[in-house]
Amino acid sequence: MTDTSADLVVLGGGSGGYACAFRAAELGLSVVLIEKDKLGGTCLHRGCIPTKALLHAAEVADSARDADQFGVKTAFEGIDIHGVNKYKENIIAGLYKGLQGLAKAHKVTLVEGAGTLVDANTVEVNGTRYTGKNVVLATGSYSKTIPGLELGGRIIASEQALNLDFVPEKVVVLGGGVIGVEFASVWRSFGAEVTIVEALPHLVPNEDEFISKRLERSFRRRGIKFKTGVKFTGAEQTDSGVTVSLENGEQLEADIMLVAVGRGPNTAGHGFEEAGVQLERGFVRTDERLRTNLPGVYAVGDIVPGLQLAHRGFQQGIFIAEDIAGLNPQPIDEAGIPRVTYSHPEVASVGLTEAAAKEQYGSVETFTYDLAGNGKSQILKTSGAVKLVRVTDGPVVGLHLIGDRVGELIGEAQLIYNWEALPEDVAPLVHAHPTQTEALGEAHLALAGKPLHVHG
Ligand SMILES: Cc1cc2nc3c(=O)[nH]c(=O)nc-3n(C[C@H](O)[C@H](O)[C@H](O)COP(=O)(O)OP(=O)(O)OC[C@H]3O[C@@H](n4cnc5c(N)ncnc54)[C@H](O)[C@@H]3O)c2cc1C
Image 1 (spheres, rainbow, N blue to C red):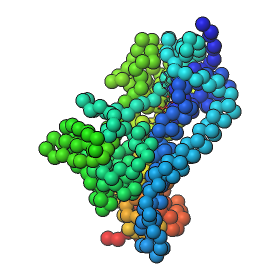
Image 2: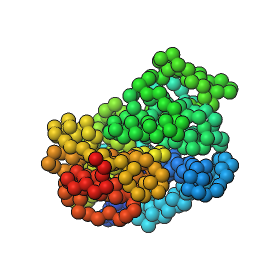
Image 3: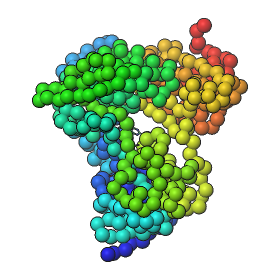
């Protein structure tokens, strides 16, 4: 048995794992990065990037279909799904190549194969043992289903949904969270009849309720159907379709059903428990410095309880590398991580919902600025709003946005939250006109007591 040693061994080459590996290498540590599939993980190959490519194709389809409202004559002839998939694959391929180049440039030793944690310093891959002064677990997540519901055939998860070679005519999407809502948005733009089934009372149930309701209004207008507050009880498939049953006795017919009920931690079968790593409902238990109970072993990304987002994985990976290198970084504020749902319209938020802020701080003030007053949004013909939540006489602790392209505004929103800005700090900052960023400026002006383009 060969033995190879390094300062750091990272198990899993997704967003969290590779970010940690690259930062550690930058800090002068020798790094072994073990990946059984493709460097880049879920986000690049089966997650963020391909879904956003589909969503962009969907936006182009909508623009073509609705061009006459801007006085532009076009004819929308339909979706060439092979062309869409080719466009998507080309983007992934280009980014994948770039990432492989970055791994080389950082002089990270990339090991191909499935790794098993043997003990706090050792990971074994195909009979070779890699030892590290530190080990980082970064094995990511998988698409969950619900008990009794087997994936297969016409009942698919996001991995299959991304690679369909046809546009379904009728779809049921089980789960109204981020992934479900994004696929519903794509398929509707591609011309499908879509129904979302969500057991909780609202779509995007983790968002501020005001935003959920606005999204529901927009989806209604787009003809996306949804059944909220109702449980799914079963699905039966035949050669020609799938029948979905709900607890209220309703039955929905569809060509396919997407199961988007969340992602489970991929922590079984890699030796974690056997090596003594403590798990909690399958997730790896860590402290706020992302240390597991085994000395020298850290965990990063989707296997750590919390938001399952690529940029959280990047930040956690950087944090761990810096912690190991002795830079003593500040623990990450989970609420300060921006969240974007890239549907049409987009939803973006950072910080606390109004309900959570009330619970945490007692007295809060809110202000909602409607995009009806924002010139650029009117030019784009998007409706939406910006909602701010501030602690009474204190900082802005929640920023919630809805409208086309508002995902791009989250950069400023997250600075405001993370720098604990008062509305009075933001109010004097000038926003270019006409941009959608002005909506953020206007909302802060109003909350600071000096509204400009606000009626009533
Ligand atoms: C459809 C979809 C859309 C998404 N869209 C977004 C988005 O727009 N924005 C966003 O921020 N996030 C998005 N996400 C979430 C994002 O993809 C994840 O949060 C992110 O990929 C998590 O990174 P990770 O490093 O924890 O795990 P992963 O990216 O899952 O990487 C884990 C890696 O470990 C490897 N691995 C597992 N076990 C072993 C083993 N034993 N040995 C060797 N290698 C192993 C896997 O092959 C994989 O490459 C989306 C997810 C999905 C499914």
